[in-house]
Image 1: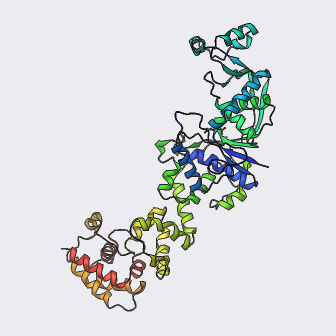
Image 2 (image 1 turned 180 degrees about the vertical axis):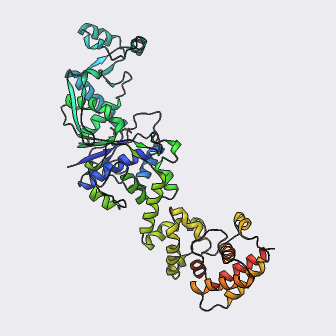
Image 3 (image 1 turned 90 degrees about the horizontal axis):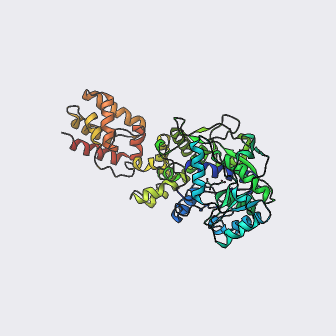
Length: 483
Ligand code: GLU
């Protein structure tokens, strides 16, 4: 049974890198019919907050990454918050001391700092010198009697650790390069290395899929698994995400928090599709995948060892592609909240005007990239044009006598039969010709009259959908407005 986990620290919002780690774990679990655990690693008490936990859960849910065990869901291996498991971590550390795999260290911070500084002054690195490993029973008794604060350090055995990273292949580290690391600090707080290993053991995690930045922790953690006599999980370290300039992705590159993409109206299925392809490849050129297709295709073999480059334009492209694939009902359902809050909604749009509304959407979809692109474009169709874009007026409404020609067009359209794309276009052409105007000039004026802007979907399709009555009224309004 595959059991994986995503273990975010709630010290900030869910970012692109974490979101991708969560997604890879989730895809792996779903592909194998396994369990996806969410564990909150709130060990940095000062920087962690409940607000951030909530924000992370919201972002995961938006992505459709659901967890089988974890916060708000529960499960047989709870609690799923790391600080609530500290006692268990300390018990394990004490057991390691009893069994000789770890020892208490009474060294003061001052001494450790001084040793390190002296080594650095000589141009050398410093590793803990095992002073407390050499203490005799009497010395230990004296320190205990004096109630000196004590940390717990792992007694790193001699030898090497090799693990078969599922992305990078075998990685070997000589223990001579690993100091006797601290697993419980002198203030009794368990460290990340201990907590993560204890929790992964207790939650029966079989595969640890996480960022490359944790590769250097892995040998230490394997030493702990062995000392605790626990089975070592498989490890897969996923390469970093870089910005378009090949530097580590950061705020400088624009939005990095998942919530920002949600707020921008990027479709969640597009975001997931895009993230999945950041470092994973299906082994072909295919790019558009639904969530289900990703689940079916995902494997750790497809993760490349090279860093992935985050390209925001590509994300927009994915969003446009997925928008175009939504059914009319689905699209309407997603845009509706924004129309409601913008006062543009009326129930007829889902009732007797639905068919018309679907046609309007099919006109807008080819130019849309985000959900938020619809509401402003829908304004002219829902009958609420207020004012003209000043830049459009400046650029396109300067021809002498234009008011008169716009008025003539309104008159010609009033009696036009039938009122369709071909006839409206022919009418605009004929009126322009007899006025000695360029066709393009009258097209611009008409577009500004009916939409308020210089850009819109195809003008004649737009006119037909807006309907004769509104088109004529808006042309007359523009004629009035013009000198
Ligand atoms: N809490 C750690 C982090 O946010 C993850 C630990 C792990 O995956 O082992 O980086």
